[in-house]
Length: 251
Image 1 (tube, rainbow, N blue to C red):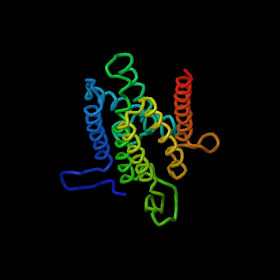
Image 2: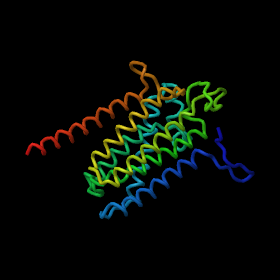
Image 3: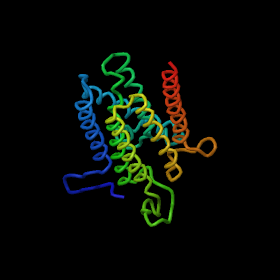
């Protein structure tokens, strides 16, 4: 772990806020790049990103509290350090951020929904950078293992599960960018992201060692249950497109 990257008598550089800032900065740059390259629409990315940042922050915090014990909820609920610092659940941020995006796009007509796939590289690579920050800080850590690539964390040798996920996200990001370049249907690209990430997250959860994720039904964590839901949604979208293609071929 390396939670403090630099420390002096007048300044301390923490890994987690640095990498969180990098994730949003890189995310904005990628969104700007892909919109200039693949879209003719004029959108205000600054306003969009401010809203996404605020909504996903709140969503990630609320999910953290929802899946925490009663004692932890009482401890964190009214603590400024919690709301302004660490303690996030990615799926919570994704869900509330998506709700905000749908209102922004469909209700207020501020963003073309058919261009939403151009935001995926920002989400994916920003998420990967954030996981590196988790690794350096020591949160979202793995279960014990004795493999050569294990890392020493929290008093034992554990899976570098944060790096597993970050590596998987980079691979997913490359796949999605190729699909954007081929100009595949936007909804199919979105469903590919949901399918690939939910599958990755479902597998990676088996190597997690922290208790924050919670264990619920059938020995599955809350994130695994949500991953199963997203898998079903993505497969339903794939099936819908397949049915449409079959209908068009018959006509």
